[in-house]
Length: 404
Ligand SMILES: Cc1cc2nc3c(=O)[nH]c(=O)nc-3n(C[C@H](O)[C@H](O)[C@H](O)COP(=O)(O)OP(=O)(O)OC[C@H]3O[C@@H](n4cnc5c(N)ncnc54)[C@H](O)[C@@H]3O)c2cc1C
Image (cartoon, rainbow, N blue to C red; front, side):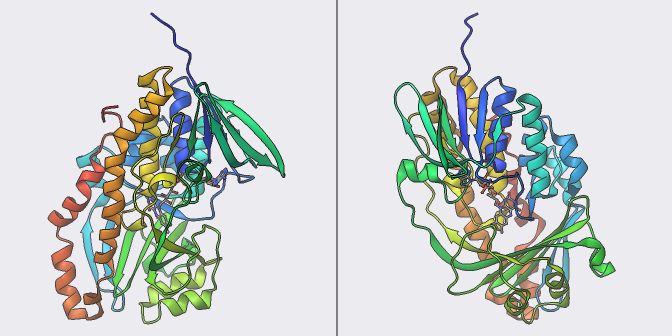
């Protein structure tokens, strides 16, 4: 048998996508180094829902038991009306998910997910993650790629066989490949906060994912971190403010005012935020190309999307595993491997970007202003058949079987 040398892969960005790719590659025998700008692997407290298609990736990487120990499995999902609080039970998410798609539907705290992935990486290669390393550019030729990064203001460079830009929505690597992007403000602002579960009124302490729908806005909240916190994400149409950042903060007063007229349960949560974070939801046209020679992109760097299908992080998980499979299949020919990865992923992620924008309209229809019309609207839009048609094609995707 011919022994091939496994390429050395450089990854810019140690978020969910970058760490997933790193672990999947290390497990296949590649040498990997991750360069992350933050000085510690800790995202600003926020939750993320992982549907079965993403959970399958964690299983494949061998970290599902550690992940499950920290996450919450959704017992149910419900829709509630913004002002009256009227509730419609959707279905038993956990049970339905395992029976139909092989894995549960989990609600997790981002720092927990990052920690589980980083622990997995360090078991494979203890010094693979380089913190406090801000990637600033790259060069490539037919033989290799050079990544430039800065640590404490000092510029350094490292050489590898290929480079992945997993550096999020404002990707430097994407900029290096394709130049400036032109995001358009959707007119929607997302408020995020995490609340200690034991401080909430007793009737709200439940292992259920809730989606409040209203005219011009919607609020999703669910338990995370073994049920110790409630994660809140409230989206509202707001003119003007356009900062896309995990760390931008607003005030409690501003957040309460945004949801004026909404049910008391919403305000009970806002009151308890340690800090209300805000993120302007921007839309980008899906990119028609991700890979150029030895450099490619992954996750939000190439297909950032609105959060209305809760699939952005899940797509980054899927990308990471498919990328590792494609590079493995291509042997030493990394250029071909990156091309195969792009071909395997671009159609699906483009469909999810477009589907996410479409789903947002359903959550915040003007019809919901009137309680009687809302009753008819919710009953019509959230039948089990319609819900399944919206999500089945997402959840049944098998990242281990898709051809590369
Ligand atoms: C309000 C909201 C709610 C969401 N809810 C969900 C959900 O429920 N389910 C879901 O699947 N998705 C959800 N998403 C989407 C999800 O958060 C993203 O799709 C996901 O974080 C993308 O992961 P990533 O690794 O591509 O990028 P990121 O998580 O942004 O990670 C990028 C990493 O790169 C680092 N970085 C950036 N620039 C540089 C640089 N120059 N050099 C070095 N490092 C750099 C950053 O510090 C970061 O660690 C939501 C998004 C929002 C805004």
